[in-house]
Image 1: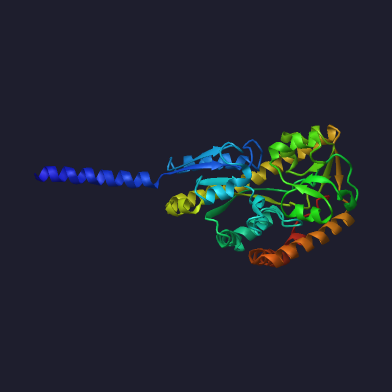
Image 2: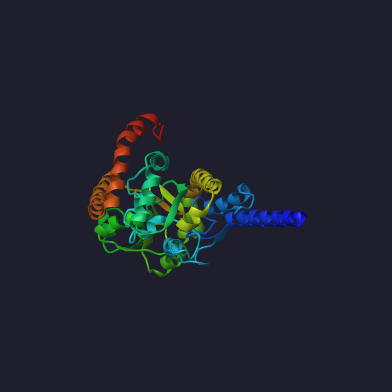
Length: 350
């Protein structure tokens, strides 16, 4: 009888232990907004998924779904918040209509360099403010910075752009706060996923588009359709991507699992930036060999764009408390960062 009780107790303990271990395993479906073959923009999602499985010894398994295969690219936030999927990987600026402050965490016209943004995000309270910003609008997600790239181009155009008046009546795909700036200049701004842009340019549905940096724009084939490529990317000096995780899923993760997600995403942020910086120069040189005209926006035009941008940012801050709070935090950081930035780095032409 004693032996039977002992065996029963051992069996129960094994069952409980196995059950607890099983309950701690995370099996996440993760739709992404960008194809994973896009360097720095989509590639970090696949890298994180692979590394989480390896680092956790299978405790965390993330299955990546290419754009549109499980959830439309622009529906990722809502799907994660509603628990339809456990996680998603996206550029959160797409959701500015639902959460007005999120573009400040995604891409800011005339904003920070990528390394300055990560400084503010990790050490200036940005990560915590992003969680609060989502919660204040009723979204149940944990957001983790999980990728960043440097400047985009200022767009691809069928006709040469020489003045701001050239934007009047132009049909252009332009994202985030930069799109609001061009709307003020009279452009007809539309949003569509990257995979639709080649055909839209080819058919004349749009006259111009911005999307990303040269290493990505080449893959999408914009240079095959239009030949005017504008610089610098005033509207997106940094572009940040995030892994959004359903709040209930995040809450049930162990401390170790959370630490692995944070570590993997931090590493992916570094690798994403490195990949773009490594590839862009050669791609841009190749564009010019193919007859693409890479024009620089004159300084006086940039100054006018900056003035309009300031109007847009102040208008947005007046309409949303979260936007105002985050914007003021970033501006305060930049006051002191610029002292360092202007003195510490060599001129690019030296």
